[in-house]
Image 1 (cartoon, rainbow, N blue to C red):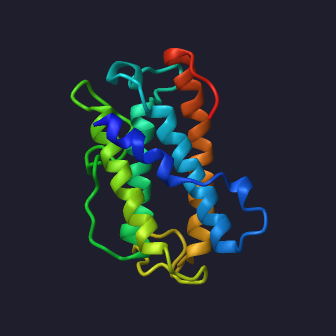
Image 2 (image 1 turned 45 degrees about the horizontal axis):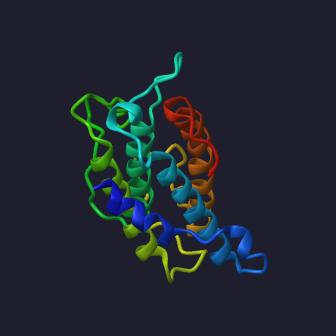
Image 3 (image 1 turned 45 degrees about the vertical axis):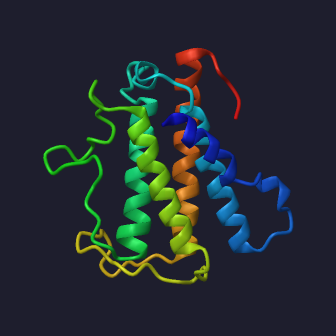
Length: 182
């Protein structure tokens, strides 16, 4: 399963530095795809045990980060941008952070499949959307009543989210097997 995901990683992201004169949409999509690819690379080749490695005092794991980003992709693109009724993949009412709380029964291969499916959906659903397109859904629990981001805001937020978690994954991967770099 991991081999199939690994083969597809190279299909994802052109290096954003190769688009120095791209338009706004091309640049935002390429930077997001670049960071998506980095997270997938950080996970590829790890065993389930390595993917569950924690570095105290944090309880983050590569497996938890992959599951979390699958939930984040699903939340922003399926539930918010497209207004689909999409249940959580890993989180529950009893444990809203269940994506991070991995067990021995959770596999990296399953998490990678879930993340890849959410990335594919996000890319397809935003491919031709204008940057000013508003998210179709405004959750009733939103902190600011009526707050409705556009696609530009969502893409920038997703770049920030991936960049932060790629840094976490970088440290965890190095501790797991010594691998460094993109």
